[in-house]
Length: 496
Image (tube, rainbow, N blue to C red):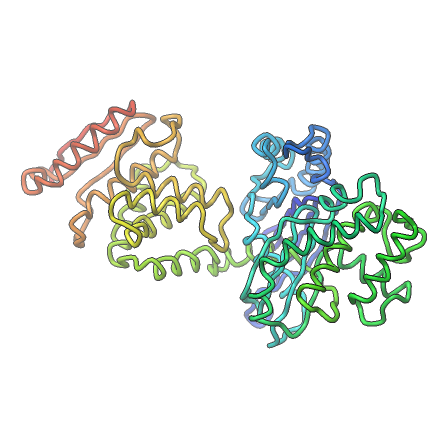
């Protein structure tokens, strides 16, 4: 099992599970798929006009995830990554949906932002296409969103996630499967309005070849080529002919379209009109299909974390440069926070929290590039709202919480149980920032830390307080903050 990785893709139309075997070839890690499952869930179809997801849709989701969880029963948590996309992003009852889905699957689920979904899609497709130096456009039409990425090699150059998908558009413009010329025109205009937001910059960057990575793209390719509507893969001329045929029929009759799967028929109109609008706006001549997409991208991203090529670390390094972080100070605070956390962490602690503490310490001063006054608030805003490749929404929220909490009043923070290990991470980051307020290195940390439930104990060498009055004052103020929050906080001296 140690050479197997698993990715779960919770899309708005389908849920997919991919299991890959990691093989070393000439010193390079490759992933070969050994098993995969796919179930059509139509999660986006359960959203009402107020974006509340119906319980029936949640039940469909949990039933599928129980099956996936059974297949993953023998996997360690660090060998599995589950990501959720657009419906989890937009549903007003997403918290309930997420909790029930995690319970059914038996593993944590990350809700990824649209730009992160696009990055992972590109990574998956790029690893499944022949090597090329040409720039490529990847189009992935999902159930609730559409991702468009321009990249070269394994590196994305432009990423975009648009609020339109085959399920949402089919429901909105073709209710009950009825297709008319007017509904096609309305859907086309709506799709073009979305695409117009990226047209100029995408044309400016350019691409040499285009690939479709979604079920919609594969269905269109099969229908157009097998019915003789196109001899060059997916083309605008072929799609316009298919549109006309659907309007004449008034609905999708699966038997009239060779290559289409019955489960895809209901959402074909929405996917078709989106793809045709993309072709029209971006002036795409033809498109082939590519395998991989999100689930394979997740597998390679998970592999990268194991091989110490973590995209998240690259993002943190980039942010430190972009926001002109004092590298030496960031390293001092980071190393001290991690050393203190090592002293007080529980025996079993999620390694992701350790990484979050490390990265929050590295980035806790980025808000200074905006303004000194309230810089912790500026830092938190950037970390929660910026595009951060590799990080899920929950990852960014945790980074923002830790960085915001590194100084100031604890009463500003949302309440957590006093035995919550996140409080320990906050404590360690605050003490580290306090110790290095002078922005000077120390030969060794003067503090030792012990935490048991809500009891905090800090000890230092005998006489240290007398020779460091400013730090003593700051430490007493820190102790007062924790006592106000309901903790006990004692400061002890020990023999040096």
